[in-house]
Figure 1: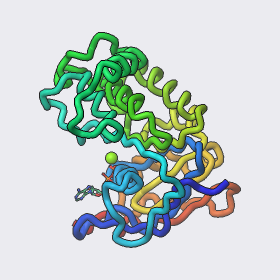
Figure 2: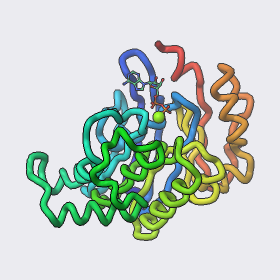
Figure 3: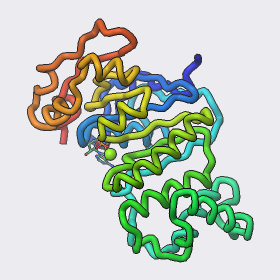
Figure 4: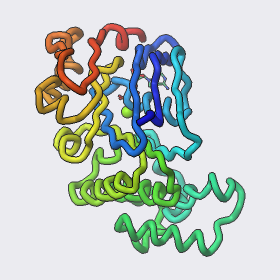
Length: 265
Ligand code: ADP
Ligand code: MG
């Protein structure tokens, strides 16, 4: 199947800081992919690149589609004390259709309330977003995704600082969207969730450390991920002490130079 999104030898710098170095990869239509890697490994940058929010310094992002892309940013990057009621925040999901300055009509309001009920926030529409807990805030962002109704979804750490019940509820929504044939790329840290629910994985550390079928990568201990995560964060050469086995089936791997993406401050 022809990929819906292709990354070709992407290098991305923020000023002198190298965030992504020579990253390539493909995402098939309808695929459900986890993006994993230690802090600062370029995960958010990868999503922003696909969303078109940042541009590569080198290489290209090829989108074989004109379909809408919805992007759920990392919640730490969102100003949460902004004075805005929940219903209005969710209704911003209509902007691509309704236009920025058009008022939201009664039908839209009803759709917002249905979306809020679907994520377990029925009756929250007049609450200020600053009053929401971490889990409620993530639920609200998912309600906004429901409103956006996009065939391609990019989610940056939707389950971080979220309780188990909320994680389960939001994960069920993701699985439903996957069953509907949407293409989903989701940054997350929880290896158990990745192994249980995400058929594909894309592991970053500035470079692409591995990509392909999740179980092929993790079950064969190609990347003993939970251990290597810590090592990747700690030592300069730690990950090179566990070189990926380049002969594993279905898995693309690349060696990674830690020096490349760090230390260019
Ligand atoms: P992750 O999401 O994996 O934690 P990011 O993609 O946010 O990683 O960041 C990758 C690298 O790029 C980090 O070293 C980070 O400090 C740097 N970076 C991210 N955004 C910016 C920015 N707007 N300006 C400068 N450096 C940035
Ligand atoms: Mg991030």
